[in-house]
Image 1 (cartoon, rainbow, N blue to C red):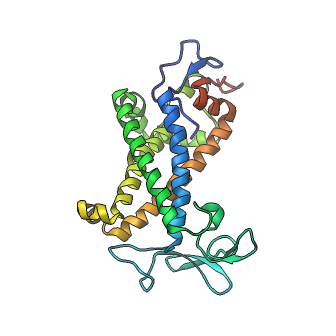
Image 2 (image 1 turned 90 degrees about the vertical axis):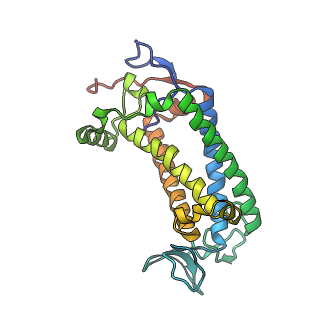
Image 3 (image 1 turned 90 degrees about the horizontal axis):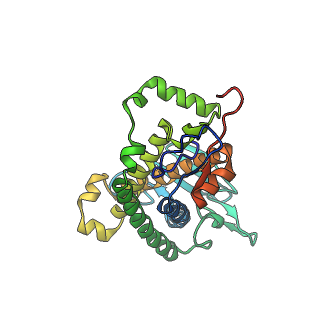
Length: 286
């Protein structure tokens, strides 16, 4: 999805058929965007370090080496592999078994360049992860409250009745597949795919990420035992946590691709300064 207009920006000026400069992102949005991007990157890399301590995922209350894992990254005497269910894929040199910068073979699940810290240190990985978990939680709470008070949810994320039409959704999907991005004033509004994706990330994936993280904490289990029941066990919560992490990675990759295709200079500048130049309609697109 192409980067949308800020949910808190004022309507574009009447003369915004294309080429007009509008104030797209207010300061709180820009701060949350960049802080959140850095936070999620650190949490992903430190989370991979934590995963290296036991690179297997289970469903239910319990999980240990003798138990059947639905997902695992491992190594044999001469190869690395990823196993999903009963399907096993060789990943030697990438995952499971790889060579570090010193030329030595390692058998952690994820290589050092993808983790924080780069050498195996479970305690340090946990400290990094938990500190930035607080940054994520506080930042998300403040952003959601600010969006509600400022009318962002009502004015920009609310899906109108006409937008629920299958024809409307399919039209937007085709436009994205053809890389036909909105021009003029249309570029300053969310389309239906953007609404779905941002609602899903802000109000579903990130809260679930936080909730499943809390469920894996023994202290929180003691204080709020209902969390374990809610997710069907600590191991189920860990599996959901892992899946959500990679869904967020997928969202990030699609978001970056759309920014590059829509015009990276204009898009990134608007997220730094707040000001955005509305794209002019190309010949034949008007």
